Amino acid sequence: MARRSSRPCPERPHPRRARRGLAGLPVLAAASALLLVIAGCTRSTNETETGGGDAGGSPTSAAPAAAAAGDFGTEKGICGPGSARTATGRGVTASSITIGTMGDPGSTVTPGLGQEFFDVADAFAAWCNKAGGINGRKIVVNKHDAKLTDVAARTLDACQTDFMLVGGGNVLDAPGVQPRIDCKLGAIPAYGVSPQSLNAPLQLRAAPNTANRYPVAGFLAMARMFPDAMNAIGISGSSLADIRPQGLRLQEALTQLGYKVADYQEPPALVTNWRPYVEELKGKGVQGYEAIGVQDLTPVVTAMNDVGLNLKYMIIENQLYDPKTIAGAKSTKFPPTWLVMDHLPFELAAQSPVTQEAVDLVHATVPNAKLTAFTALALSSWVLWAKSATACGDTLTVDCVLAKAGTQTAWTAGGLYPKIDLKPGEQEVSHCYLLMKVTADGFVYDKTATAPNQGFFNCSDKNVVTLTNPFTA
Image (cartoon, rainbow, N blue to C red):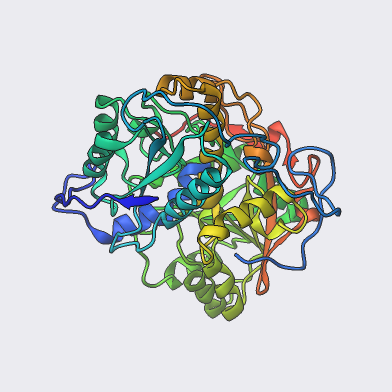
């Protein structure tokens, strides 16, 4: 049961930029860099390695028992029948709970952005309803497509019908904050971007992030594997105001690790010719590299090959956990490239029962759904919401759901993520990561690069550094 909000509304510019309309190219860059803001998302392969340890997504060689209805990984009975009958308020009747999910797939600038949120919403609702719903109430999903610029209007739509917003998000989310607060619309979103959204009340995120902490697990691994390259790191940041701080944070974080940043660039929102930037990297003797906010690596790597830049390695983040990265690796010779992840990759489904459950859950309803980091974020949010809503029993309120969610001090989304504390005031960036090697055959778990000590993950306080300047001003 799903409905799309369709009430027309005017486009509005990004609230933090004073200019005419909404310029498409900067928005494209903002969208492509989205998951870097969050972190700091495919096809299976037979070339996977296994990790070690007994926690945080442990590998298994035994065929797992079929999960019981309403169980997701280690989370048991999050959905099921019951006798809840009280209509407690907006979106909650004796027989149903109406949930809204936000996304931007209808954007003409970045078509399909956040489609994973809608796919997971449809799939999770179908899965949960089949198990009996939330104490017997069926989930009804409203999918609110903000198309990047209509966030406030779509939030107002949700205010009319929805109990809560779950498992979604918008790139330009600031305009939706005040309408959501004014109508007391609670949320367990997949992510937040703007400071207004990240700091807003009436919400809890299953994947916390803070501006003054930066994950560096990938570069710790590269320092171990390529120590001679520590004196020649290159960073392509961004001149776009919303993304520029991320590059500056990375630069400070690497300096704290003992890296020498040989070249720091701030390209414009959309680069049509990467050759001048790559020639600069070569001229500075860069040996290791990360590009903040790049949506497609192929033009960058093509320019590297054209000028003869031979990197020892390249690090990429969640926004490039996408089939197009592998398509690029098939068509262009990539330098040794590793993807840093904070959740179990879908390529490990054969060795990780909860990951296989996630794949099966989504594809049972949306067979062709793309599986990315957005998929994992959305699933974590929905599992957290369902567990919390079920615990509230007959008296289902926003305050109860958020309070129950906030008691999770070792949240893993059933084992899909390493443990993290969701208690308000205690939320912290994950200290657990793994590395996937980019190959022409797919993303391949690299046990040597990861050096796992908890299941597939490397977990250590050293994997996150505290910044002296979060560059939030």
